[in-house]
Image (cartoon, rainbow, N blue to C red; front, side, top):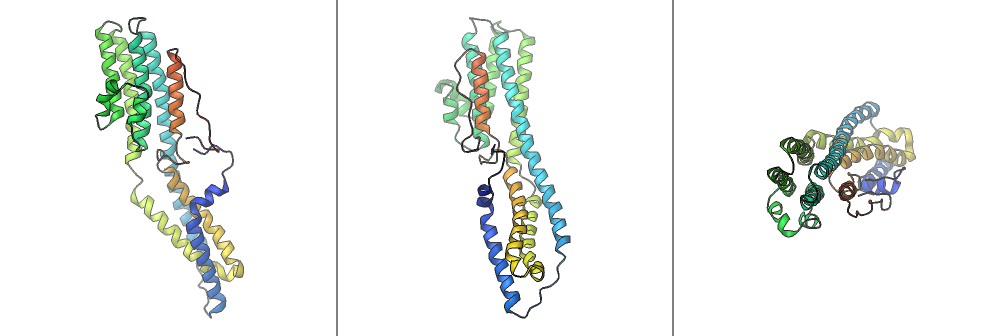
Length: 294
């Protein structure tokens, strides 16, 4: 996620320079044809076209941002639920009998959020899990298709074992299970966002009409702008192309690009909070690198 107060022009240009260069070349061709050939440029209702396209792109960008913000909200719930399960484990289970179990549940939750991060970004999960759990403890979850859900199921079984041993009562178990349900619901929401793209009409039609508008733009402007058509048309096209790119950047909040949610930083926040809750040494918070928080 870009955390600089002012967006960098270089980042914007890097993402749209190819279609922008093609647009500039086309503008030059149209301008040259207008002056070198006896062809009268047709009068096009560019204002009407541009207004309709702007509304279309606005709806698309708002839909993409809604997905991005929902993803951020779900990760906020995940952070809070992780703190809650650690606090319940620490407060409900007795010392020193359940000390190892407390630590196991806390480490499993840290491994869980990191496994979920890797799954959402379609990255290998094993290394992230084995950083916090032994091979023997992690193996049952790693053998499952959904490793994160396997880790969560294992945590639920350990809570059930604590009740069977008399370390917690059924009311406390129910409270802890309710937190696990919140965690599972948040994971389900994230997987829904990841696996359900915007409808095809929201992906294809804005791209098609934006490029068509950019093609028609110099034809409608050349009589008014003359030799300045390549500059004016390219700047106007840049605004539409940038708006189109914004929707593409936000539509998948878990894609591991500079525009997406800082899952690494949020997982580190959970790791710090949970380790400190059981009195263990925690790493430093993640900091932006060149204005980007991963």
